Amino acid sequence: MSNLENENLSPRSMAEAKAVAANNSHKEAERRRRKRINAHIATLKNILPNTIKTDKASLLAEAVRRVREIKKTTAELTAMEEEDTDDISNTKLKCIFPSETDELKVSHCDDNSGLIKASICCEDRPEIMLELIQALKLVQGKVMKAEMATVGGRTKSILWVQILGTVGNEDSLGTLRRALKVVMDKSTLLAGSGQALPGSKRPRYYHF
Image 1 (tube, rainbow, N blue to C red):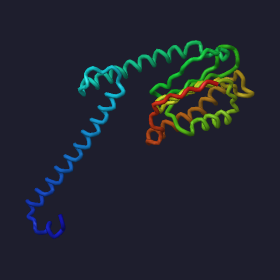
Image 2 (tube, rainbow, N blue to C red; image 1 turned 135 degrees about the vertical axis):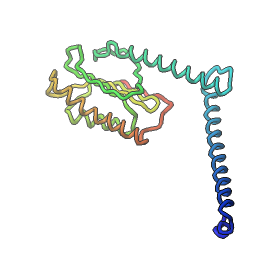
Image 3 (spheres, rainbow, N blue to C red; image 1 turned 45 degrees about the horizontal axis):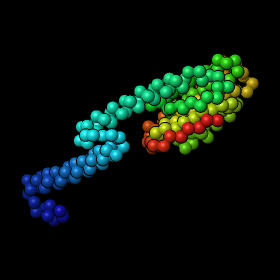
Image 4 (tube, rainbow, N blue to C red; image 1 turned 180 degrees about the vertical axis):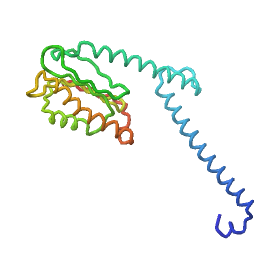
């Protein structure tokens, strides 16, 4: 509507015109919202196996059940992975799964090797491997063994580290923890700002 037309309208007519425009804008926003919902429902139909009922409520209920099932399985596998993993000579292949929460654990190994076992879990980023290497160099740490996995935009690394010149020194724990915490905190900060990697459907596992 032109400015000239606006000048010829009465206050009541202008109010009605604005109401109509607002209503049309609301209808368009609602149309786009329904389109997005239907697209996601269609995706659920394709990725959920053995779905008998395909109405929205049934699909959402099945998705919830599957997520709970996966979380339970992940928790069980994580618990299994944490058992008997201090021994660096243990060559049994184990899968590690990143958790949904950021965590950092640093402790001495129980096998009298003098090594430190460090576990770090956070959002994945392209630079995170380089930053881990730089953090270890900063504390004069040498990686003797490493296991890493990236699933759904989350990454977890378990490192067996020797801090040169400080074997068995309790100060080495704090030094390594502080260096790795900087890497984890940066991932958390970037994730909060929306700069982290989008969730990846293809898991990556590394064993060295």
